[in-house]
Image (cartoon, rainbow, N blue to C red; front, top):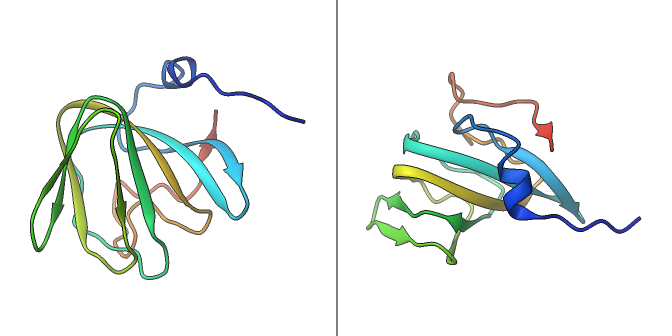
Length: 120
C-alpha cells in the first residue's frame, strides 16, 4: 500500500538527538529521520555510503581533509570508508538514506550506538 509522509509531522514525533528513526524503506535501504545538536563521534562505514539531507537547520560535516557546511535544502553523500563527524551548533533535522545494514556509529561502538531503530 502506498503511503505519503509529511516531514514536519514525522519530525514532531520525537525530540531526542542522535537517535535515528525509520520513516520508510526503499529497496535495501532505510529512509531515516534524525535530529542532532552538538558533536557526534569520528567514525566511518566500511561498506555503506550515506546521504545526509538537511530538512531544517544546518550542520558541519567534519572530514579529515576539509569540512563542509550543509545548509537547509542541501545534501551531502559520504562515501563508504570516509571518516566523518557531524557537528551542529543548533538543532538540525536530517533525513538519512542508507543501507539497512548501516549502524549509526559505523566502526565505533559507544553510548550513542543505536543497534535497534524505532519506526515512526
